[in-house]
Length: 357
Ligand code: IPM
Ligand code: MG
Image (cartoon, rainbow, N blue to C red):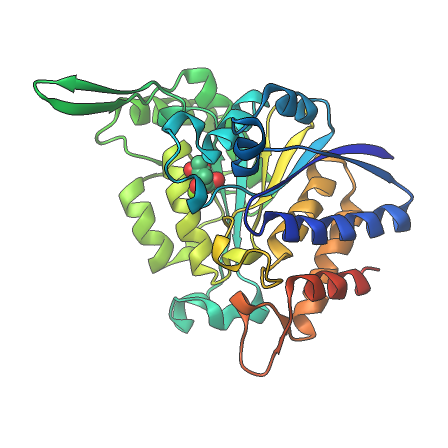
């Protein structure tokens, strides 16, 4: 198959980790007789420096014209003082919105080789951590109106949180469908004891649940969910939630696996074209030093093969190669353990390449 991949290297460690993922994709293309064609896209801080805005229109168009987008990471302290609407993060939000990627899938899975890295007690970790946060990505307070005005002699800021039924229904469905492919358990997280958006969320979810009788469904308030994720993460299979709650809970979920550098993500809409990126940030403190962990990005490339390109064997091959590199005791600094071999970003990429079958 021929596939066009838009590549956003971004800022900080972005370029290094994306290079390793492309190395792996090229090897996959050769082995399985595909042609991957890459187009560079500037987004984030580097786009601000070059074009004066975080996502120039032409760059969004390049993404829309591709079969999928691979992203490293964006942002950094260099752009901390640019105005809110021109920050690197705005580029990411404009990309998600522009591509209509409403469904963000963030797995929280403990790699057995890295179990010691989890900050949770072994007695909790032993019960297993393997769930997915399905986060609504282009609605809610992120995409509502933001204003700051002078009122009664002081600055007053407002952010509007809005959800329409259809926005809840389409992400709710993804939650149920995801659970159907896994352990048939769905937890819908909201704040229905306080927010109208959450009460509507719950109403729509309850309507949907009758269509999926095979799924064990429950509602959970977001504060309780934050607690349950550290108390007993084994109870979760799929969590579905709105944009801001999903942002917060997915960071918490990744932390308990002990290895944020390992976690990939996919963002999808109704078409096949998705955005694939590791969930970690641009780590400017180690940028350009060959220290970053490329695994989250390499696994994102595997997800791209699986979900956007319908290439499950290719995705399996990449994931197996990562497992083998970990089994061989290779570790980047962020996941280093006693008795293992410390390697750089490039060496980790090379090792995964050598284990591709
Ligand atoms: C994420 C990030 C973004 C978000 C930021 C960078 C805008 O935290 O992808 O989780 O809040 O969605
Ligand atoms: Mg976040």
